[in-house]
Image (cartoon, rainbow, N blue to C red):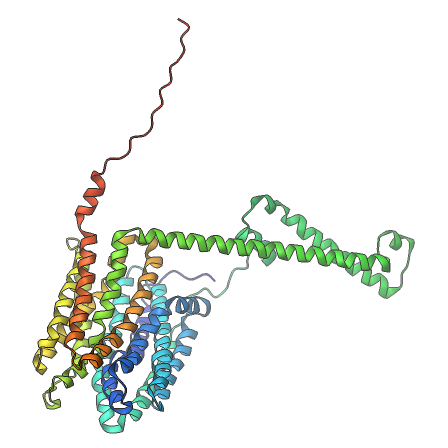
Amino acid sequence: MEFKKSPDGGWGWVIVAVSFFTQFLCYGSPLAVGVLYIEWLDAFGEGKGKTAWVGSLASGVGLLASPVCSVCVSSFGARPVTIFSGFMVAGGLMLSSFAPNIYFLLFSYGIVVGLGCGLLYTATVTITCLYFDSRRGLALGLISTGSSVGLFIYAALQRMLIEFYGLDGCLLIVGALALNILACGSLMRPLQTSSCSLPAKTAIENIPDRYSIFSEKENNLEENINILDKSYSSEEKCKNTLTTGDWTQEALYSKTSPAMVHIKEPETYKKKVEEQTYFCKQFAMRKWQLYKVYCGETLSLFKNKVFAALFIAIFLFDVGGFPPSLLMEDVARSSNVKEEEFVMPLISVLGIMTAVGKLLLGILADFKWINTLYLYVATLLMMGLALCAIPFAKSYVTLAMLSGIIGFLTGNWSIFPYVTTKTVGIEKLAHAYGILMFFAGLGNSLGPPIVGWFYDWTQTYDIAFYFSGFCVLLGGFILLLAALPCWHTCSKQLPKPTPATFLYKVASNV
């Protein structure tokens, strides 16, 4: 299917608007799940570690399943995937209102809603990239703020709905709001030509060109097809002769007798089986070759010490940096902060500052005199220090200030693609980014339960957030050490092995 040239405007701005609202509607509740987390603790009476799995799965499953999401969008298109995923998110939220226990929530809210959000994120980013080329960075920046604005609004909205309608009513209303994703998906007009060009070759002819490995068999393709054509024509001739009863001497000599028909049919079938077996072997060997190439490229990525350090840093960052968005409300309650002091939910503060951080850090990354890798390291180190300071915050004001700082630093997601590109190059960006997102999703899934288990063990969040801060600081220092320029100078100063030289004495007749 051929796509038109990216218009960089026009209907593309409608795509940006509906993608913004799609991320707003789908990520609003999962990112503001901290409000629901407190209610689930009271409703089911489970431990904080087990209950935290619900919110962590809702955020991590989409990243873990990113390869599957990419295949779905590539196969079916952004519009069908968005409409289907809208049903998933809305249905998962509504099902969660009928949850009899925490295990049902792990499926309905954690897996169903999380997978739907992952599909929607991939669909919105893909179709936005199709509609924009020169303004792609601006368009992606605009739609990415939808999730942060959703976190800001849904934190207050869900708290208000719980006060008026209870936890079950809140989930039903939020699920009904998510049905508006269907309207957004219907406006995602695919960017494609109206007429698709016919393939130059038939399907049978395309198979050897795509999957053939051994070149010595490529020239036998037309000969094999001619054999099949001749066998088909001889079969048709035999059938016509048998039905009409035209037994002439010429027909007898042309090998169309009933005895020869029974001999010819197994031969034709055998040749067809041989052709199909040959094609299947070529296809399987080609797939195996591609798999070995993929594994080789993956190993070559990890030979880059900065990429290996980046992989460790993003994992540790999500293990330690994601729990505040889920647990900050419960931290305030554990610190005996009264609800009358809450001017705004702490998650709302974190959400709006995340949007500000994405925009400002993205602007800073565009300056040529700023090294984006060192900027990312700086956000990690400051994030680790802010997490270690949470146990010392005992009032709403200090918790709100720390929530704002953590939210702003969490906006470093906007510069993470720049850092990955600087590390591995634009030609390996897709491969490397997919690997990093998988481990980011793994960190998202493990972080909140680990912090919750620390609380269940010690009955305080102090050690839990010391652990979170240590994880982020460790990742930042590892990345900083790997990115220091002294490594490059040391590698340049290593003596290169001198090439072997061979001296030949030329015989002289003099």
